[in-house]
Image (cartoon, rainbow, N blue to C red; front, side, top):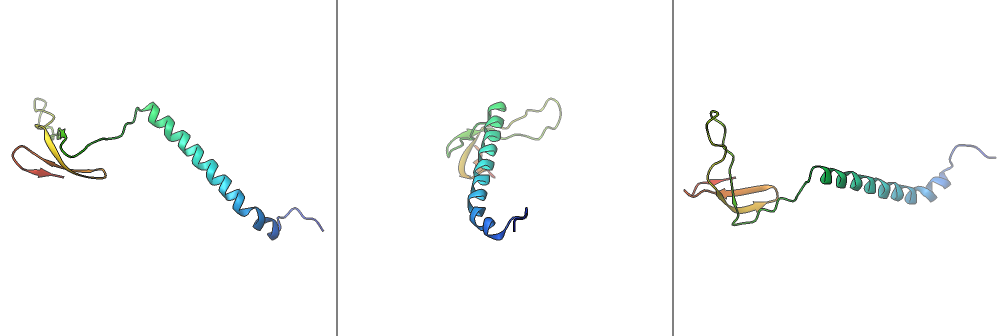
Length: 93
C-alpha cells in the first residue's frame, strides 16, 4: 500500500544528509550577507595592542569644550575591553 505520508524508514535514511546540507547552505548564505555588510560599511578589525596611544572621549559640557582628552597608553587588552593609563598615572577600563 502506498501513501503520501513519509515513512519512518525514509526519514532515518535521509535525516543526516538533509540536515547537513541545510546547515551548509544556511552558513554560506549568512557568510554572503556578512561579507556584503562589511564591504558596504567598510568594517575593519580594531587592532589595538599594548603600548598604543588612544584618545579617550570626554563628556560634552558645552559647545566650546574639547571632545577628547590627551592621549592614553593601552596597558592591557581583553577581547573588546581595554585598560588605559593616562600621563598622570590614572587607569581607566
